[in-house]
Structure formats: structure tokens, C-alpha cells
Image (cartoon, rainbow, N blue to C red):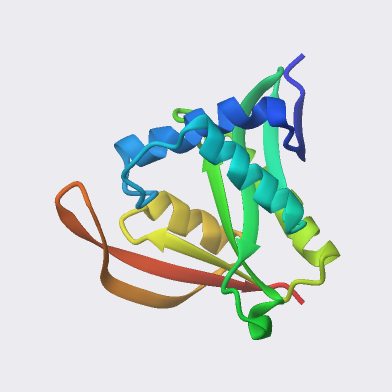
Length: 166
């Protein structure tokens, strides 16, 4: 059947989201967290997104979650109300199959529906695949912060990218 769809996440998707999230925490510098997320943490994160009316999307193929995406506040002050920071994570080994593009396209629709003006991504500067992806999606590099993160016994740079939506 090979049907691919992007939809709003449900509580039943949280374990698949957690597995993807924890892979990147444990194995990469894509995410600067150190400690894998527990089930209750992911549930709290999901409920908080719902309360704030921020989307959590999943990309599903043949009833398997291939990735997830969301956005949230860029900063909490009122003047930043129209700017959001997003994240897109693809199941390990499934990159390059168009799941990220599908998730991003739908995430952008949701941002437009919420009248957001600016979408920001904070990307580990050594994550060339993500930087290239964002460039293809129309983002521009707006900042490069040196040695702002630390993981796996090394300092990490972070590149901020931005897309003006409206």
C-alpha cells in the first residue's frame, strides 16, 4: 500500500516519538540534551503543546511513524508572539525519503494558519544535512554562535536559520 500521510499526533504516537527523540539524544549532536526522555516527560511535552495550540505532527507510512515535527515559542515575551522555533526529527535510517519535506510543508501550513510571521531553527552547525534541507526549504542563515553547546566531550556551534512566512 505504501501510503504516506502527515497528521496531528495522538497520545498513541508518543512512544514512537520518544524512541526517535531518544535516539538523537543518545547518539548525535543533533539534539543537545544528554538524558533520554521518560514517557511522562514526553506526555507532559505533548500536553503543553496542545495547551499552547502548537502542532505536533507525525509522518506515517504503512502505520509506522517515520518522523515528527512541531513548533513552539521562540521566546516567551509578548513581542515574539509571531515567531516560532521548530523541530523536525526523522526516524533513524529513514532520512532522504521526503518525510522531512512533507512534515515541514504541513508545519508551515499550520504556522500560516496561526498567523505566524517568522520560523526559526537552531541547528547544530555540524548537522550539514539539516542545514542543506533548511536552505532548500527557503530558510536563510541568520546567526552562527560559536561553542554554545557541549556534548560528547566537545564544544558545539549552533547555526540559526530563519524563514519569513508572511
